[in-house]
Amino acid sequence: MTASVITARGLPSAQATVPRLRLTAAWALAPAAAVLFAFWLLPLAHLIVLGGQHRDGGESGYWQVLSSAQYLGSLAQTCLLALATTLAALLLGGISGFFLSRQRFFGRSLLVALLTFPLAFPGVVVGFLVILLAGRQGLFASLGLELAGERWIFAYSLMGLCLGYLYFSIPRVILTVMAACESLDRNLEEAAHSLGAGHWRVICDVIVPGLAPALVSCGAICFATSMGAFGTAFTLGTRLNVTPVAIYNVFTNYANFAVAAALSVVLGALTWAVLLLARRLAKNSRTVL
Image (cartoon, rainbow, N blue to C red; front, side, top):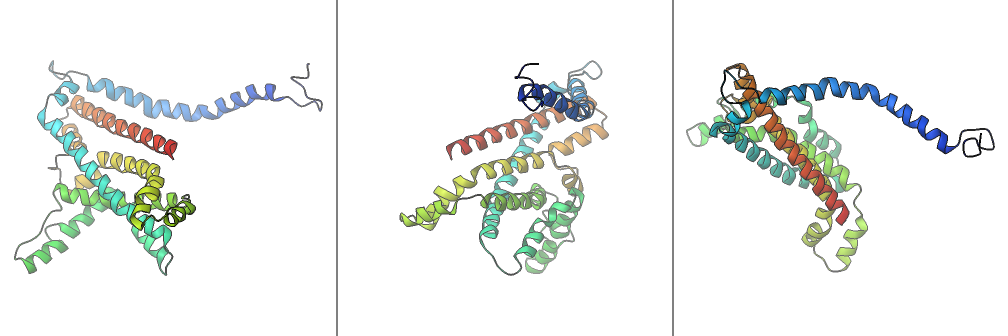
């Protein structure tokens, strides 16, 4: 064999090992590819096809969704709710995460643990917490009865649902921002201060652009989670006009599988489009930096 295949010590050269590494990688990825195909691609393909079926000779599921004011309103309301939750979580969690990453004080670790503890709760428990806070027998109801003579109840509205979504959105932002702050270059902040920039100027021109990729990525995750969250919405009431609850009602109460599948596909497509846009924005922000 030539020297390009066998080295002086009798070992295979790089040209000979590359095909072996590729073959080994292919065998290693085969189980994951099989699971992906069997448990994700096949059900997804069946869901897409099911949404296009006609029920009793009528319209397809996609046309029923896209031509119905109720379903379109549900999608719009879900998007607005997810957007409001994401913006509030980024604001509150971003400020808290930056403060906790830069400050060292007694009880800091305990405070971080308490702020991120809601991540351990399922959606049903989060909904139950909102009811205990703002339900008919909740704390706000008792407080309103004492102060104004009427119960303050908002747990079963979109405001209560937004509050429930913030339970598990804010901790995600806090953890992401704290991790991102570790990679920020403090010399840039010191240089900006030395050039006469004020505190708010440094935040707007140095800190926020430095955290922009992490904020965009985390915001996309919060948006996607809020779009598809079901347990919290179901606990607070099935009359809420959000798409996950609408899918559940159409599927269980009316057995309209075509419309349920079409709603699921449209909801997933909207969420995927936002995730794709966020990925590109995060990539562009890294390129600018």
